[in-house]
Amino acid sequence: EKDAVGAENVTNTDKLDSADEQNYGDQLIVVKALSRFTIMVPNAGFMKPGVLKVGDLVAISRKKLKLVESLPCKYDPGVKVL
Image (cartoon, rainbow, N blue to C red):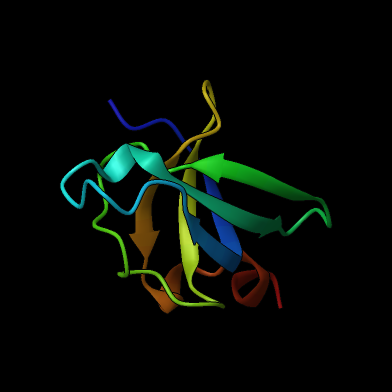
């Protein structure tokens, strides 16, 4: 079940445990939301480390505030409103 909040901009990535490359949940990502707040969210295990770059759009789980998936640029809600 993917309950995503919407598009968020990735501002920084920081891998906590570099010893285990297969454990994708040990990665914290700093996310700047469209509502102008910045949060640090863990990777929910759906994405491999190194996939995200600064400025990418991601979906965040609403219930647990975890990174769910990377979104294509065409789903930017700020562009749809204009």
